[in-house]
Image (cartoon, rainbow, N blue to C red; front, side, top):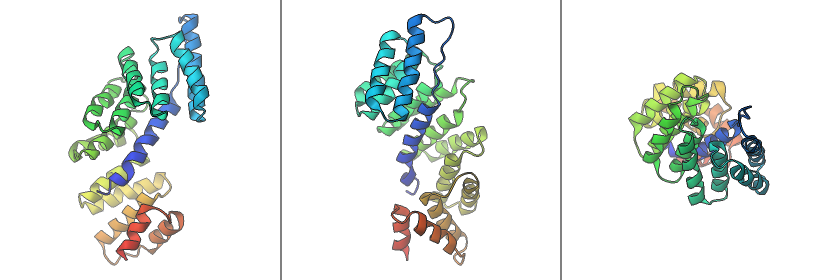
Length: 252
C-alpha cells in the first residue's frame, strides 16, 4: 500500500514535534523542589533537542528526584528512554505521566505515538482520544493525525479518514495531513479528490519524494496523456535515491 511508505517517518517526526513544543511552567505556588524540577525538565528537553543524551539524562533524573509526581518530568524521561531503546522503562514513564495528569495532552499524545510505533496501534487510539479531551490542548491536529496514521497501519480506513478530516478542520494548512489524505484517496482510486489534496499540500510545503510520486501517478490516472515531465524531473533531481524514484524507473 502506498500509504505505508510514509508512516514510520511521520510518527517519528510528530513525537519530536511534541517534544519541541513541551513547556514546563514554574508557578509561584510550587515548592522549591517542584520549581527546581521544572527547570531541570526544561534543561533536559533542551539537551534532548541537541541529542546530548548523557546531559539530558542527568537533568531529567535530577528532575524526577526533585518531584516524583511531575508528569512533565516522566514524559520527558520516557522520550529519553525511548531514544535509548529502553522500551520497557520508556513505557513505564509514559504511563506514569498520563496517570499523574490525565489532562496533560502532550504526554497522552506521546504515549499513544509510542504504542503505535511499537505495534500496538489499536491500544494507542485511547491515548490520542485522551489527549483530545482537554479543551485547552493547543495542537489537537497532531493527536488526530497520529490516530489516523495508526489506524491506517491496521487498515481501518474509514476511521482514519475521519481523523484526518478533523485534523484539517483544526489546521487547514497541516501539510502532513493533506499528504496523508491525498495518499488515502489515491489508494481508494478517488484520483480527482486526491489531486486536490496534493495540490493543497504543495501550497504549504516543499515537494517530497512521496508527494511528487503521488502527483505523477494521480495525473496519469486522470489523463494518461498528461505531461508529467516537470514532476518527474523534480523527483529525479531532488530525490534520486528515493524509493519513489526507483518505482518510477521500474514503470518505464
